[in-house]
Image 1 (cartoon, one colour):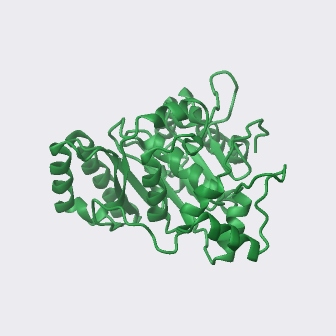
Image 2 (cartoon, rainbow, N blue to C red):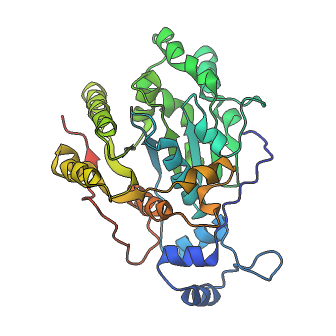
Image 3 (cartoon, rainbow, N blue to C red):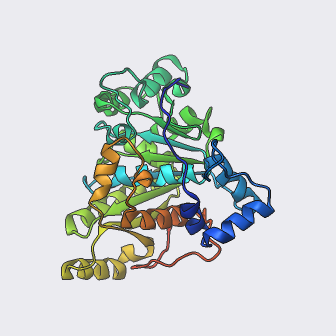
Amino acid sequence: MNQSNYTLNTNISVKDFANTLGISVQAFHKYVKENGINTRSDDGKSHKITPDVARQIAMKRGITYPHKVINVHNIKGGVGKTTSVHALASRAAALGARVLMVDLDMQANLTRSFGVDTARKAHHTMFDVVKSYVDQSANRVRDAIIPLSENLHIIPSSLQLAHLDLFLIMNSTKVAVQNLFKSIFEDVRGNYDFVFIDSPPALSQITSAAHMYSDLVAMPIEMDLFSIDGIDYNIEHINILKQNYGKNLEIAIFVNKYDGRPKADMEILETLKSSNYGRYLCDSYISMSSGLRTTIAGGQTVWESARKHPALVGFESLLFELTTLNFQVEPKKQAPASAIMTEATV
């Protein structure tokens, strides 16, 4: 694993965590006092919830962290895949999960959203990992992992990944794409509860490898027909993988940048709910929030913003829905749609 100087702040406030638990701040302080849990900061004057504290509380409440690989993908660009991975992964880490993010998009937006500059500093990417695995039968995945904080890690991307698909095609006799990621990540998979993959907007060798390694493919859409059209091709591709390799994948479709005021948005959503896609549609949705991009551009997680964006409520709800990790005693309902996530049918 790379030694890095990144010290990303994944702590959350007592008020924020109490809200996640669905209890008052007073009730939270009473709970930690009764259970001997120290939430005081180093100066002793304030309280904070570190990922270790969050995990300790989760364990005491009987909450377990499932092992799950989630691939966020849509062949339509600009639908918020990277922002979704950023928000979901960083929140999971703040709540005590051990998280690895894999940036497979050569644009490296996820990588840069955490302040990692692959243009000025040489970092290993999945291209290096795959190439070394194919050429030398060596596993370099540990060399590519960058710890952003103690429990939030990333394998970065760069323009170098533009060559990866061609490399896999040229070496198709040496490597089976359907088992590629399983073989590569086998050495480190036990270190993480969740693996979040940010896939490029394409159907290719590398996205097929990511699909084959995943437990769940989560597809963000916006309320426009072009965004929804991309689902057809993605589900068709998943069905081909199922037919050829017997791979059963959970599918989840979630609405991103939801406004709800335009009549067209409501009409498209109702059409989506009544279509064959309705069974994949999540209850959780992400509200329109123009400030998220600004926060990410500052090298912070979206959760650090002084002004809480409406979208964050949706992202936390979506995290719980996709992972079954739920800190709330009585989960909040959010729905514009029915939440059914199941495997694709042929």
